[in-house]
Structure formats: structure tokens, C-alpha cells
Length: 392
Ligand code: SF4
Image (cartoon, rainbow, N blue to C red):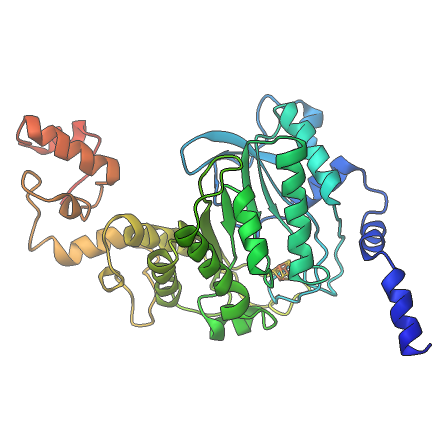
């Protein structure tokens, strides 16, 4: 067939319809939702997952369709969160991912209005109070982002949904799409996956670290700094988070935390999520050893010390290889190196000094500051009454 005729024929084909029919054979909406929401372990659990078990109030049939889980939002509110993909079809080939193109894996896809209508029903029935929406990429990042935005628009405008909404920013999304997502969402996320260009090449060679992943995070911050918050529904700009596949590219904890620290300081990243690498069959990394989940825990502890406790990267007890010791709490390790010879006097210490003491968190430091305005803290039992487990 001549090129021009082929072009005109392709122009008439409804790509959305073909994709929809191709991926959804024999699945009703709830089956699709159950299937797609069970495939989100690669997305950040930024809304702290309280439990993976379905709620006790669910009937056996509902439990069988458990696509929501209890979660705690950053403001402390507890909700039933639906975390799902709009589509598990993907044209990219990230080495660690079960959805990578060409992998023999069942796929499913929602149309924006179909998902929005289903979620609105679940929301009205109080079965789902918040939603985190991501997707595999089909037809380019911008086209996929449009589908996520269409879904969010329908939810907010047609169904007047005012609950929690977290939208994923796709690699390849455009700046006006990022702006649009920020007008609709409580939170937006871009998964960096790896801490820098070199490491990303080992995990996802067709993703471009600076242009496709870091740039949208810069756009978000630029928009937050330069434009007034959109007043459509809550008048606040969304927060941003990212996720790393810890250990997938043989990167060190120092690399992960250096990037995390930079993001928190320069683009006001709210939080980094770390997902310990585990191999998936029939992917290029299927023979790579799984990473100890304890590494995730240490990375979280260290990232909170950087974000909330006034610690610097130089304070972290990195090994010569740039990793955190797996079997030592980084704050405790710092204290053992620094406080044993030079203990802190809790009656005189500034807040930032109190926060260096193992066992004293943000609330604990505030409680000590309040209590000692009334009485001098004389012994450890007084600290224990304030809820402290131990101190140095
Ligand atoms: S872009 Fe990469 S990580 Fe995302 S769904 Fe596709 S293959 Fe998986």
C-alpha cells in the first residue's frame, strides 16, 4: 500500500477503541478494577498504607473484590484508598517492571469516563474515599497523561468529587498537563526510579532522567512558586513525592539520599519512597538478587532525619561503599559516635539538639520543651512520662 493511503487509513482508525477492545476481553468493570488495583506495588505508598487486609466490615464477596485498603493521608486522616492503574498496557521496557512491553502478561484498560463512573459509585457507597491513579504508557506519555487528566476532570466536574486525589505524572508529559494535574490533585508524583542518569540507564534505558523525570518535578515547583494556587476545589497546590527502586541499579544509599536531599531542598519534595528491588520473572533483571527490605527501612529513617531532624548527609553512618549499615538505626549509630563522649543536657538543649537524641522525635522534643518550662527534668522517669523510650 502506498504511504499516503496507509497514512490516511491509519488516521481513520480509532486507537482508543482498538486498545480498549484488545485488552479488556471478558472482564467486567469490577474484575478490571480488582485486576488493575492489584498491580500497583510499583507505585509509591505515599498515603501510608495502614494494612493490606480488606476492612473487617466487608462481606466475603466484597473481600474478594478488595481493591481498596485503609490508608493514612499526610494530614493524619484515615481513609479507604483505591490505588489503581488506568491501564496496565505499556509500550516502555523498563527492566524491572511486570508491565514492560512484550512481556506475556494479562493487560486491562479503563476508559476515563468508565473509571470515573465506577469510582463515583464506590465513593457514594463509602467503599472508597480517595484515589491514586497511575497508568502504563500507551501512545506516548502525553496521550496517557491526557487520559489520566480526563478521568480526574470527570471526577471533579461531572461527579463533583471533592475527596483525596493523587495523580501520577507520566514520563513525557508536557508542562501544561502538569499544570492541569496540579489544578485537580492533592498530590502529584513522578517516579524517578533511580538517583541519576547513569543508574537509570541500568533500570530503564528508554527513560530520560533529566528531561522526562526531573524536569516535571522542577515544573511543579516553578508553578507553585510563581502562580497563585488554583481555587477550583481546595485552593492549595498539591505536594509532590517520588519513588526509587532501591538496589535495582546497584546504586548506593549515598546516591539515593543525595538525590533525595537535593529534591527536598530544591523542588520541595514532600517525601521519597523506596521500594526494595525484587526480581520479576521474564524480565531482564529476573536473575538479579532481591534486595533486603530492611534497606528500605534504613533509607526511610535516613530520609526523615534529613527532612525533619536537621541531619546532613555527612551525619549519616555510611560504610566505605556508601551504604547505611542494615542492622543499625542511623540516628542511634550517629549518637553512639557523637553523644557518648559529649552527652546532651536535656534541660538546656535547643530543639535541634534534642532531635539528635535517639528515642526523641518531633512530638517528644516539643513535649520536653513544654514540660521543662514548668519543671526542671530531673531523672529518666520524667522523660518516660513524656513518652520517651530512651535517651543518651
Ligand atoms: S513506563 Fe516502565 S515502569 Fe512504567 S509501566 Fe511502563 S514499563 Fe513499567
